[in-house]
Image (tube, rainbow, N blue to C red):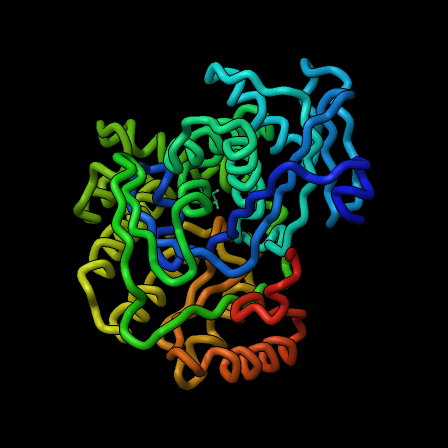
Length: 359
Ligand code: GLA
């Protein structure tokens, strides 16, 4: 169904935003650390029109229509993200008229590729355009994060929204999540990314994620620092009890891996940093699952692959690999076959053969 079929009018404007894949710097953003995401080709498109009957949201993917009858009551599901964007804009002092909002997305859900941040950023961009609001891209990311925390109830940090708002598919976005200082970098020479979904949705991610956040905060308190970003020597972790010692070791070594990667290392060294990141996420941070370990192992032992790791929060979702440019399709096909032979059902997400899905 189109916007016109749903709302009986033509859209006034439309905007889009991409999902993201993080190459290095996992579980560092809520510790004020460093991250290195890039945008994926899959996008979320939001179309807008003015409504005469209060806010109305429609998701083409879910074929679900939500009417906001009471603005004091936050809706659930996809509508909570859109509602959150509208509410944070109102709190920032903008007058938002009743809107018809149509959403269509090719960003996979539940794979750790930030479909929610893409929805939020696309929504905010579309509203900015429609009402000519003086908001810059960093503010869009910050508003999106506030919306997600307060209206979708997810204690997220800022990486996903910054990536959706500022990253592109041709570059890596090196971001300091404490200061929001950033640099746009090229991929290591002659390389590109490959993203494969493990087929295991990250359903346990929320409870595991929140628990890790609490552990990091507890460790920071014990170490007398504001956040783990302030620790640069992983040896400091040894003074802490289990499992806080390993949690801290992951965060500190992961921050250091990002900082090393952005020095302009060779593709081989970059790949080794990704491999080390996976081992750290698996053994020290304990956010991997057998499916992800299997997929990463297949990737790491496939000729041509420079490095591979789980990406996103973990507990399921996708893996990312660094591969020679031009070899991605052949490697992806070979890896998927081996992974499926091991009894799983994976899916190649990047390179994206359905790139026009949302158009
Ligand atoms: C999720 C969160 C991000 C980040 C990652 C882990 O994707 O939304 O903010 O914490 O997990 O690196």
